[in-house]
Image (cartoon, each protein chain N blue to C red):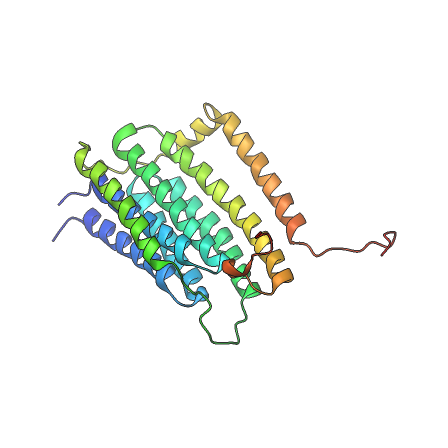
Length: 171
Length: 102
């Protein structure tokens, strides 16, 4: 019986990569979007095994609660659900496989030729340290990040609204 | 067997490969966006893994928080654009949006 951390890692990695496979290969865009849920949850679990507990909670709240809901809204609003044809067609599979083979070869070469530290480390909570980092060393990037979010929110509202014709405009 | 850095890097690399495949082969604009989310998650996972096993401190987690922030704003704006494209073309297949060609 392998130790529990190994079992947890293998289960989470299987969940993550299996769901990512469905995202990449499903013929139905709704199945792809829903499979993204499994990938996000698996990544959140992997964050916990890497002692990033705050990030795991953020991942679930922001990705699952926000981004995935947005994507599902977009899928439902832009595809005609009633016709049963393939809603997620693929093309250029040969070129894609070629590029991915090259990318994975380079990554594998780097990974095998570098001397990585291999010892396992215990998972310790890190939320307090993260909070101190955000209110100390990384205060300016943190504030700029909130400005970026505000700009994105205003921009998406402006982009997504229908054109309003006001009473004083001609034509 | 002990879970080390290489295992997390493998998960990140495979996730990146699947995301790249999705971005390159999908014709549905929302499908391309799903691939971008996979790639961003792979990068974030690598940041946290390197921080846990090599760097120490919390700088990797700080970068991952910024990745999550940028992914959220990117998704919101991209989906607003997709909605507008759908309103004017009645389709979001990326190979049919050729109004700017030539």
